[in-house]
Structure formats: C-alpha cells, structure tokens
Length: 260
Image 1 (tube, rainbow, N blue to C red):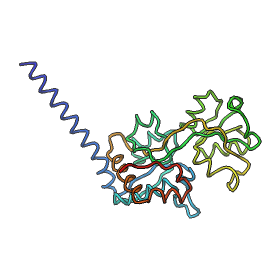
Image 2: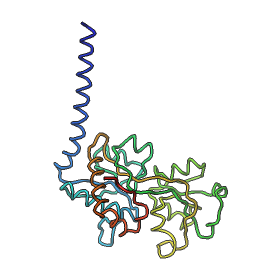
Image 3: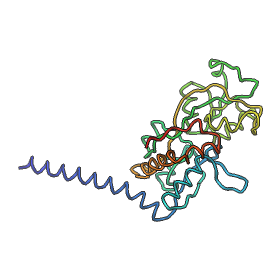
Image 4: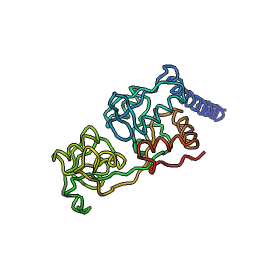
C-alpha cells in the first residue's frame, strides 16, 4: 500500500512540475503582452544595433526586433546594457530579451531560452595595417582588448593571449586605434562595418579568424517567446523580409536559412 501511495505521489509531483513549467512559459509571454512593451537589451554594435543621427536604434538586429514586436502587437524599447551582465539584466527583468549579435555558446544556452541560430559569425583579430601580416604564433606576443564577458574574451582565453577587458567591442577597437592595445578581438560582422577603407578606422584591418560561431536571441529561462521568435524567423525568411533586411546592412552572406 505504501508503495502504491508513493507512486501516486510521484505521479502527482511530475504532473505538477509539467503544469508549473507550462504556466511559467506562458507567463512570460503574458507579461510582455500585458505591459505592451518588449524591452531589448543591446550594446553599440554596428551593423546589428546602433543609433542613427536622430538617436533611433537601427541595424539588422534592431530592425528585426521591431518587426517581431509588431508581430506580437507590442512596442519595442531598446536598453543599453553591459554585456558581461546580460544574464543578470534578463533574469532581473530589466530587459526581456538579448538581441545583439549574441553567440550561442554553452553559457548562454544554459542560462537563457534561446532562439534558433539565424546568422553566422566568427571572432576575428583587429590590428593596425602595419601588423596585418603577423602569423598566428606572433599574435601571442600582443596585448589584446576584448569586450568583457564576450566571445572575444573567450577566444583570447582559449588561445592564451594577454588581454584587457573593456566595456564594448567598439571600445576594444578604439584601444587599438589609440595604441593602448596592440590588437582587439571582435565579431567579424562588426569588423567589416567598423575597420578598413571607407570606415571610421581606415588605418586598421582585420586578419586572423579565431573561431566560427552562430548568433541567436536569448529570453528568460522557460519563456515561450523563443519558440514564437523561431516561427517569426521562418515566416520572415519565407517572405524575403529576413534577407532584404540583411541586405540593407550588408550582412546577407551571413544569414542562415530558416526551415519552414
């Protein structure tokens, strides 16, 4: 009899856990819909999220976030965050999602409900043009600037590079331009927009690629919004919106096909 009673209690516990899980998933969506605003955590990251001359957030990610918010029937608000504190900002409900060229690494996947990958990326080394022919071995003699808590910092650690953490990838590039650091490690999509001929840093260039990775969007653990975004990505890929938005910012080659 005790054994049967224990089995019944275990079954009730499992059903309760499942019910609570479903309730939690739904509650985050209800929370967003109830307040009528999706708050997106970003950093200054051209061509993904950055401000135009009027102070409006634009970019490949910013435009997609606005379109996703429209599909939900809510407004979208962008909040600038410190990248190393993104998980804390999300769990504390300062922001509702992280949509800022975020690499889908083990740490992110463990701490957030993540969308499917939608874009390819790599961590790439930025140096003055005078150093563009350095070998991979010679890079170990340089001091790097990296965004704190970023995939660039992880790449520096994995390669045993000496590095200084800064607040943003843009700051890392500035460190190289000013000569404070020998090199920086930033996302390849940002590198293409920020350095080289026709950019604000014509005397810098990008060289060795250290990693290959993919971008995704992060929501609070248990949120059903990740799946809603996956459906949005599929529809936007099918009707051409995803690629046309990417072409606007020159990142179409990095876009991943979204299976319907």
